Image 1 (cartoon, rainbow, N blue to C red):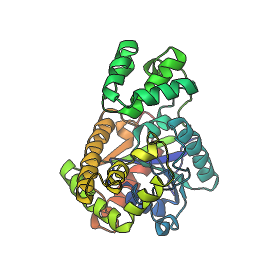
Image 2 (cartoon, one colour):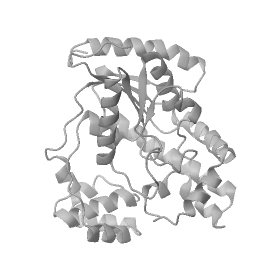
Image 3 (cartoon, rainbow, N blue to C red):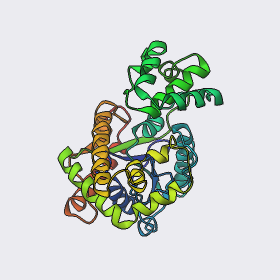
Image 4 (cartoon, rainbow, N blue to C red):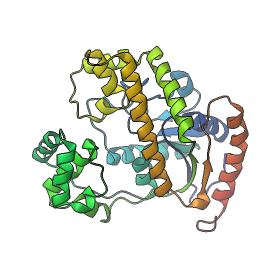
Length: 329
């Protein structure tokens, strides 16, 4: 087990884009460091989406404690504020058990809510949420509307992102203030511990090839049946789980609108675009100081030589950083 900070608490972040090998790395590190792996992926919280979100297998979960995987029904929309509360509780449990919390995922805003804190945005009214949901059917128009009343927030959002645009609109309609304003107000503090981060940053062509292979494997493992079961619940298509990579495409295939080949092509393309945005976000939004971050410019696969070589290097780096005074790493 790595040495602890003055307050006895440290945690590891394993971050990076989708399909970069975060889960394999977190599992290997957790076995060496007596760790508890805590999910920091916004889609892996939904229990109906084990295959399409590439959650750890039951066999992998049995090797060491895993928390916040598949804990929520797809019919409930989970937020960063909800995840932060659950993640902090999971970290407390890990520390109490003498284990190292390992936050593993690619949802940067979730991780940043722990490392940098989180603004406390009031709940939107039911009327505002319903209005935002209807307007989000035309995200470009909603972006224009938002730009007219809340340009600071609209300027940070893409006109093709209905989920975030709807969230911004409902906050403005409910409070008279934009999300950009709320985010700079005092809110929930950062977690009281020393974070060390490992960030995977493989080349995009490597990721694209891996995404293509993995989606084909997902089909073999039951992704179509998973989506069929999800559709049988007749859930609101605006729910986050209904927009997980592969769900819209396979839903269209099941409705007879496109072929399976077209669904695969579209899903791979959408996932590839998402990984590009993830990589850009991590490059411009560091979770911890550069001195507390190690970057691996490769994709990690379980049981491969690169993983075996990197584990001792990462453990040595972590031990050095946790022993170093904050600000002097």
